[in-house]
Image (cartoon, rainbow, N blue to C red; front, side, top):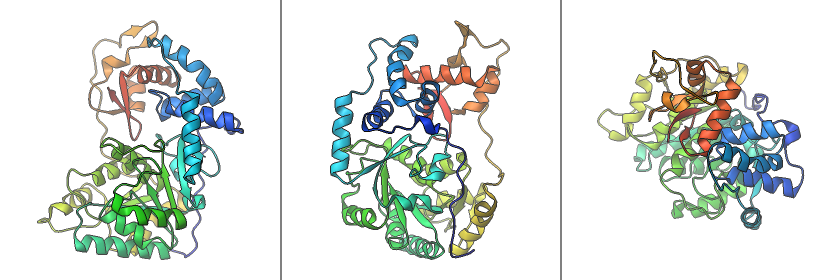
Length: 385
């Protein structure tokens, strides 16, 4: 592994360059579309590509909602977008738009990349090769020591360290990589530091590294915000290292996101007697790369950094129930709801099951998302709401 690393060339963007806003009113429309009710990343991208700009997409949004049966739908108010914009700038944050040169290139390749991010710090940090390090909040002394050592050594090799600014392993990883490059993905607003005890650390990251958030200014993080944040952590990185994590933990959610995004998943093994090592040991049992130090991590990522992502064994995706009758249709649109359930399934499997053109299924899913009948999950998965 050489000392000087170059970030890999991103996959061709989902946002046409001509659609990127070039004025403040157009940027505000971009924010308004992203903040509009039931407009997720996939729907946002589809509408931008179909209508050519956020301004035109905003104009079409009420009609799309009406056609889907939602009455009285209104887009996110301009006044609220202006207040958020002014508050963010007052805190020293800058906008990062999906498809722009400043947007983290690896995150841009994720299927559910946030169309809009607030950023605070050195945005060039997001352009460098990155490894995510995550783990338990109630970490052991040995876990903290391992996270600190691996983060510091990876920093010396030229990697930026991404994590979630949480207690325990996240905190150790950020502190150890402050001088070499670190990115904190926040679950709340860019101005809301959680936990409060990391206020000084967050300030140091804003001065020496980068903090990012897709949430509005002033947003206090809620439980369901952390899984959303986790897919950003894994999306930023070429690979993820789980240092400690219980069998049911946010760290394993991040690892699952990483698998869905085609990232390398690595884990530090631990004692079977320590519940905090249960998740790591399970990941290794299921095919994650066992790593002991930074050299192991660099070796695992060397093929990816040289040749790009390689095919890897993945867990079998849940299959849809095969019906003996063809899918019901309504007005020529496949009845997607009859093929969905509470268990998330990949959109491409749904498309194959329906036997319909991708564009028609995507449009129908966008309508169902706007009406609140389906829910999108990290990794391009879909379920009934």
